[in-house]
Length: 319
Length: 265
Ligand SMILES: Cc1cc2nc3c(=O)[nH]c(=O)nc-3n(C[C@H](O)[C@H](O)[C@H](O)COP(=O)(O)OP(=O)(O)OC[C@H]3O[C@@H](n4cnc5c(N)ncnc54)[C@H](O)[C@@H]3O)c2cc1C
Ligand SMILES: Nc1ncnc2c1ncn2[C@@H]1O[C@H](COP(=O)(O)O)[C@@H](O)[C@H]1O
Image (cartoon, rainbow over all chains, first blue to last red; front, side):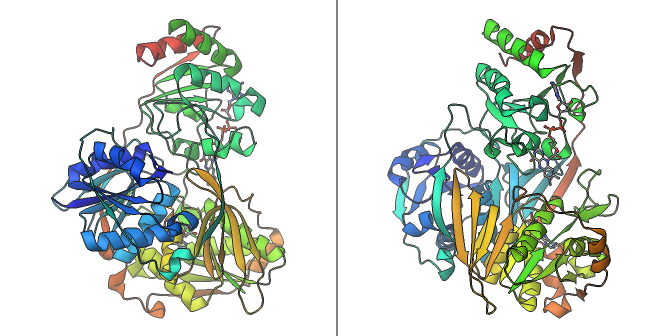
């Protein structure tokens, strides 16, 4: 069976959930091998094995921590060169997409970004993508070289398949390009107790209708009652009411939760691009003609400052 | 020094976008325009010059005849001249091919700094800037919310610095020029072309190039050379519109009822 390389997305050795989803998808295509760059591989190996990694390539070099994207490209290209994988899977973060893009140029291989599903096909992996603000579903496959695929979070439910991976330390011959872009400083984002936007089953988002940073607690309280992540429209973020890392939409994060609640959000195409594939959509808006209502499974036309507190009280009552 | 800004002409996102039978983007039935996300790249190029960096700004697009409109709009915002790569054989080219054409055109024009948008609003892959850095063999300083250029001289040189909202952290990054930069929609509103700007743009030079001029064989690009292919493109059925109730004092309770029925509570 072909080896399938999975680039591990981690924070100091703590493997992030999208990687477990990639390992799960990789098993449909062949034998997953994890590629771990940076520090903390010892702690990560067990988790990677639990989700089916047969092998873990470890590149622990200062370059991968101190320089942007290019060192990872060198590492992945070198490992792909010796292992001749059936495919390379990378999480669809900004950095993941950029790494995949450059590896594709170097390996002269086809690239597919933002897959929401992958199946094995006669001519290699067949991917599914949502395009044009999720108005189309596209199936595609790579026709040249090693298929390189970036996969969106939540594309699969992580399934365990315990293995004891062989660990192989790799010394990478970095190119001159590797140290081109220096990371001068890194300020980790503050961690909240709420689930991450891309990983949450439920997302509650506030827009311009929330009318001020001081009012966002109305959104947060309902989110907490539901165990949800908090999102925001670009209008709310641009106004400085909520951090950009919570922006949902074309130039923010694209989410696909079981339930999305849009509060005081009109439903512009760029916002829809980030939430349209949610399984169930609910909206609260005082304008009955707001385009968001075209998407909803359930909508309330009303003032969010009346509806949200009542909703919160009722959720807590029913729990 | 020389700044090349890559701008793309894209189908209007508010239009009813779709596909042709061969799986390529339908560029006929929806009006196209300069990608809004590339306006931020133009704005930053103009700001760099306004900050005192002596530079010539050249806009570059790869696209059909009408893509000239995108260049005219960019030139109306400011800047010096433009390059339009246009060739029938380019139709259907994927990001890998597009980046090849852009890279050849950039090398031909000469550059110290290439500025791109963070993603095109149609394909929205956000990969072309990284591919350009790879092909041009220069650093990538991408996804910047803030960008500054320092220490340039007439001979070139200098440094580009920026702030990037990374996946888990806010990063300050920097590289020596020449480099490829991409900027986000958080770099600051793009200016509107003034009437004077629109008039001045008519006199600015737009150089037309084809694949021959760039030494690219027609079989290196286009749909037949794409390294991935669309097997099927299916329009998602519009979401069936569910119940919408008017809040008459019980809206929150009614909504909770719906959520409970769906087992979210
Ligand atoms: C290139 C580009 C990229 C973009 N990317 C994004 C993106 O990633 N994400 C994004 O969200 N947007 C994005 N936008 C912006 C997008 O076009 C919209 O401007 C934005 O989504 C509007 O946010 P909003 O719905 O909160 O505000 P508005 O459109 O102003 O809507 C506010 C809504 O709140 C309702 N409201 C007001 N008060 C109340 C109340 N008391 N109770 C109930 N309802 C109330 C109003 O009826 C209205 O419908 C992008 C735009 C461009 C051009
Ligand atoms: N055909 C094109 N012509 C000029 N610039 C382009 C073209 N395609 C992509 N770009 C540039 O690359 C950026 C990212 O595009 P993409 O990777 O397609 O999302 C855009 O914002 C543009 O700056």
